Amino acid sequence: MAIYRMIALGLCANVAGQATIELMVNPPAAGDASHGAHEAERAALLASLDRRAGYFCDAFNKMDGVSCNPAEGALYLFPKVELPPRALAQADAEGKPGDAFYAEKLLDATGICIVPGSGFGQREGTWHLRFAFLPDEQAIAGVVGKMEEFHRGFMLEYAAVQTAA
Image (cartoon, rainbow, N blue to C red; front, side, top):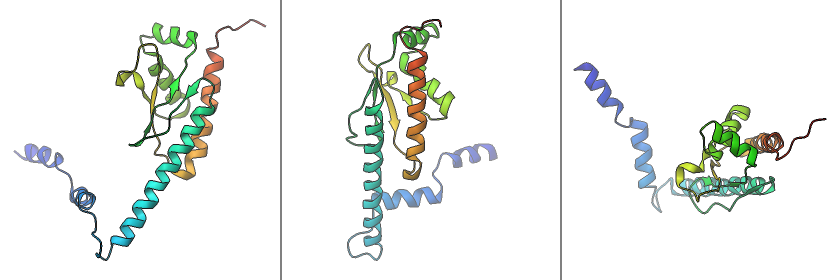
């Protein structure tokens, strides 16, 4: 019985989680002492998310073979990646969609986790990634630098033709 109770308690949000949800669905109303602080913090957070989305979108669009539309909501960008035929052949040999192959290589090389778009029903023959633009603003330059370096190396490694020297 004790194990059952312990498991059942784990299914419920803790007190801090419950208080946070309460504040989220019932924010301080105009006239409340904390209304001004809440609105200022909310505006600052939304502005920061907008800057992060723009920064990452611009970075993706500067990478060879990558195109990305601006974020229109949520916390995600969905860059489209043109994968070289050799990368697609290797992915196929490993029994993976091309975008999953790319995402796994990115994770292994940089520690950056990006979700393959193949799990979202993308159009046949296209490769997308779902990227959450949540890194802290101070960390963005480092994250972008790692992604750009990885992408350049990946595209060189799987270039269409490699000649012997």
